[in-house]
Image 1 (cartoon, one colour):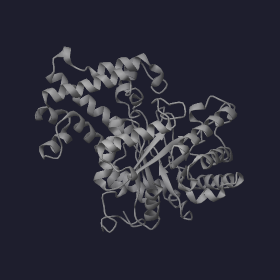
Image 2 (tube, helix red, strand yellow):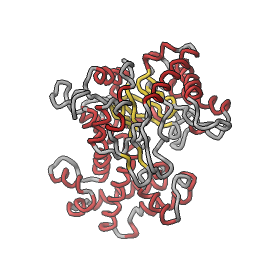
Image 3 (cartoon, rainbow, N blue to C red):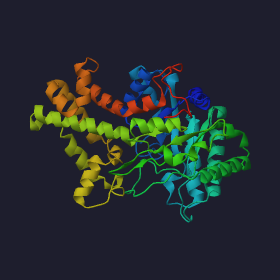
Image 4 (cartoon, rainbow, N blue to C red):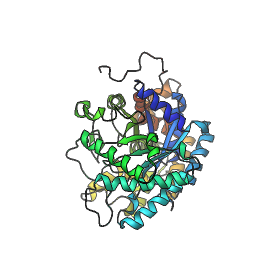
Amino acid sequence: MTDHLDAVLRAHKAGRAAGTTSVCSAHPLVLAAAMRQAAEDGGFLLVEATSNQVDQFGGYTGMRPGDFRALVARIADEEGFPQDALVLGGDHLGPNTWQGEPEAPAMAKAEDLVRAYAAAGYTKLHLDCSMPLQGDAAPLADEVVARRAARLLAAAEEAAPDASALRYVIGTEVPVPGGAHETIDALAPTPPDAARATLAAHRAAFEAVGHGDAWSRILALVVQPGVEFDHLRVFDYDPDHTRDLQHVLDDEPDMVFEAHSTDYQLVEGLTALVHDHWAVLKVGPGLTFALREALFALAAIEDQLVPEGERSHLLDVIEQRMLAEPSRWERYYEGDADEQRIARRFSYSDRMRYSLPDPAIEAARERLFANLEGTGIPEPLLSQYLPAQYARVRRGLLASNPRELVLDRVRDALRPYSTACGAARPASSSSSPTIGAPR
């Protein structure tokens, strides 16, 4: 499966502006939408589970790595998506979930986490030890992060059915999983010298644990290109701010940059990131944000068509379940009760995604779909609430049923990534920009 990643790397290093989208979501509708987009693009699909979503204890989804793998495979079968076009990865694998513990127990759990992913056949592993643990001085020195990452690499090499198939991602300046927790006032890209120091520290640490040979399988380095989002604001990519950083990997023939928190970037920003060697673009909350937009739009249509006693009351059910389990969101959203209510529903960071698998919410979603399948969706209402989908329905490109409309709205969040990564363009196309060419 890593042949797909290697092909992107080779194309990028050969001078093509080639890249790949990394879909970081465990929601079945998001995964189905991503498979449809990848099928249309004619490429492979990289899906990554994040360490707090899926771990050896179940994560917040209740799934272990093998369970998530089975879920993705089942959805692929349902969608007719080829299994050999799937690449599975693990995101932020490390002691993220156990930051409140001392190094010894936290890292022991992190090693077990990585072993579970590697043993389950995941081939792209992001080793993330950038977070301080109990008793650590912050920020962590590169050498500490690298030493811990080397422990995880050794665990993965030992547990994988075929260690040669593993591809790793490293980095010490790693954005917070799932978007920033707080309002951001300013954001600076990683200094080039800091990125070089990260590379040197990791190379030395891997050699120290007897795995220096794995260096050629380090697929990507995570650095901060000045891209992020908080609850209300998106920081857009500015190539002028990374002119020197872009060249840090010029002497690394097997490595590109990986960009985290690219959610909500405009297509021109995503395209510029790929051009400037951020060849792996990760997206997660932006996809469930689009899913939520579609579900809320359908609920508004339902309000117009279905008697109150028969409605799904999806928004009310979501609010009730989120208030019943505040531990899922309250540490992320500050402000008074009204500000928190708005954030729960509409924040870019989309912590609602933690609650969507709730059985009561899923039952309301199913009722919403059933109600609208029963009534049908009049075109004027579709135009009012989902205008892009309305246009595709009118052109005969999209069926006007709830599931199809939701999947297409999620694909609206993925289409800019396909354009930026060149997935829909043949290799010989003259429209594919060459790296280093003027923009």
